[in-house]
Length: 399
Ligand code: AOF
Ligand code: ZN
Image 1: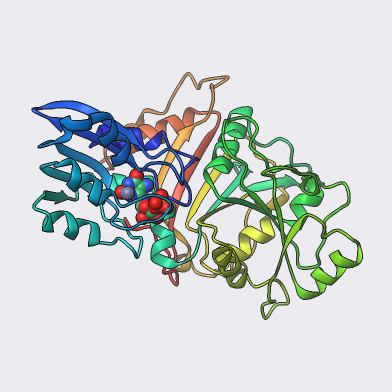
Image 2 (image 1 turned 60 degrees about the horizontal axis):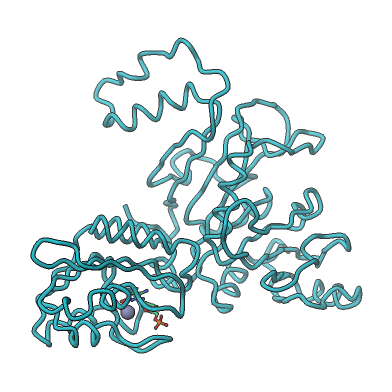
């Protein structure tokens, strides 16, 4: 199953709205065929492997990271192909949450006399497709907030200087995240300040939809987001008056426009914004700032994951990454459910005297976590990704 998971990851940034799936066929203790789902519309993982195995699949065991599907979408049901091939056993990692499958694939295989086992490396398989699972559980896209900030949590100096807090390595990370998400979203302030293209350039992968959130319908004439061809599509999420303004200025040509309602504070309602994204069919959104958009989404418990890129500097006064969330007591803070820290890129000047006590936290967590702390302390740069839990949120990713 580990191999099947590895194969599944080869479909990364290509399969959405489908999940990443890998499959390995084993007979007499030997792997006879492998496959993975490359992109939506292409053969499913099991089909790729079954085609390679041919007649040898009879009596074999099929490992697959997702419950085999039993419905016809762009492709036919995998259950029927497995039955036709005469496999003896199917071992899958996680149940397909798609309403057309969800246990029905499992039942169909058992009915046909195939031995079925489920749950092997389930957590890993679900983590791999966290957006797919979240979408089917909540009916809304999985939202990742990514921000580059200083060690003291600023995204710009008091004069607005923001380039560059992060390193070239983390730019690659940003592009990778863009390729893995259906859409990338920014606020109007970020468009004004940085004029980003929001495209995938430093890694291979498709360009996501680009969403600008602007209650007033601001989109400067020179904005790179107005430039686009082929797969470059820009969505403006704005109020009714914003739509009128864009129309007046003749800026709507080639754009997709979402009319979003306003909340009590007069700003665009983040719940309605995400609802529009769900209705549009987006499964995952990468939010790249700025501070106001990040704050409103966090406040509405609409962020599922946070990726923070930390630049190794302290600047004091400046724009905070996150604004007022209305939290007055620590007990009300948004708590990260799972945290991981990685060092990004080479360390230009390693600390020659690491504080040993960081390695020896009495009764502390396992070695990996201690190692992270140490690396962090010595490291020049780090980024962490965290799944979130918030008091009122129903959108947790599980533990
Ligand atoms: C599998 N193996 O490798 C994948 C599955 O439109 P289609 O025909 O490609 O069907 C898409 C659905 O099939 C998708 O929503 C999910 O339920 C399932 N994906 N199933 O047995 C695979 N990718
Ligand atoms: Zn299938």
